[in-house]
Image 1 (cartoon, one colour):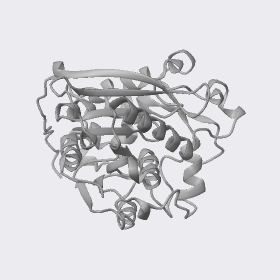
Image 2 (tube, one colour; image 1 turned 90 degrees about the horizontal axis):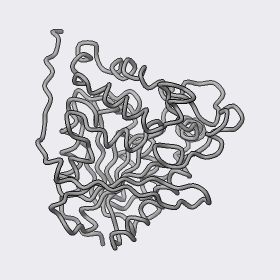
Image 3 (cartoon, rainbow, N blue to C red; image 1 turned 90 degrees about the vertical axis):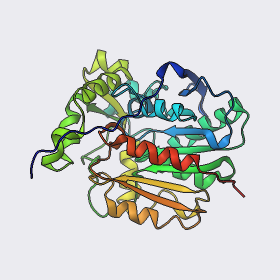
Image 4 (cartoon, one colour; image 1 turned 180 degrees about the horizontal axis):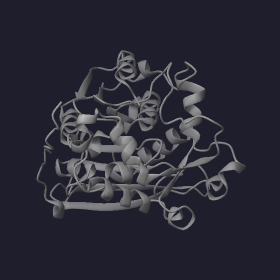
Amino acid sequence: MPEKETIVTTTRIDLDDIIFEDHHIESDTTGITLYVRNKRSRSVSQFGPDRTIVMVHGATFSSGSLYDVRLGGMSYMDYLAAKGFDVFAVDVRGYGHSTRPSEMEQDGKLSPPVVKTDTGVADLASAVDFVLRHRGLDRVNIFGMSWGGTVAGAFVANNPDKVVKLALLAPQWLSDKPIPIDAGGELDSYRLVPVLEAKARWLSTAPEYARDSLVPDGWFETWADATLAEDPWSREKAPDRLRASNGPIQDIRDYWRAGRPFYDPSRIAAPVLLVHGEWDVDVTIDLALAFFQKLIAAPYRRWVEIGEATHLVLMEKNRIQAFDAIASFFFEDYTPE
């Protein structure tokens, strides 16, 4: 097959019009604070529930790393803010600029895996409650990807009165096959992720003919620098490596590979959008379909498949397709009963 030409869809936005604020909020645990970043347009003064989004990240990288690195001059959060949304993204404890549990400040071999999914759900709940108070709202939209899709889905299933809509990118589901993020072996409290080596694994999930065009030149290096900056500890103790909690990996073994759903998607009573990348090997299309078919209580549900995209579609050449699908879904008029 001939080598593919790199064609990147772009959207022009006025970055000077975007306001950035950050907040350190209390969690449900004494001594643990959560970092919440916010972006919105300077030209919009009022936001209702249908234009407010709270986002949560996956099992390895923080919200800043996944949602707010300016690739090609624009981040996912920038895009949503420019479209008229009030966008908040929380770092679960142990990630980004949130407090690390004490077990992550010592040798990982001294403790079992920390920051499991129930903790992620509690931290998302703290962030949502903060946003509701901060903006004087009764509901918000929710977005999560991968492990964050589980965190978001479980939160929405348990809090229907606080949610307008739910958008998910490649949410976890039951698998009878090994899941790539779990490398096997005994789990310490956290793992060290070699960020600079991530590109080879990332590109390997796409067909060989498409690898050179999947991530535009310079994007990976920009992302890697920003990701490593999210954990200053790494620069001193483990250069070029990022701490990531192993609680989500333990939950893969205890739930998703054991045939036990962490929560029941049929209890989600909000409209749901599922976005998936054609070349995603972390959450394969059969897993995504099995999850989608469980959404029987959603007032409506939608699947958008992004061609020539992997699990990290939000940082690839076709990312605007995912951005557009999510923004359009949240824009649609819908009034919860």
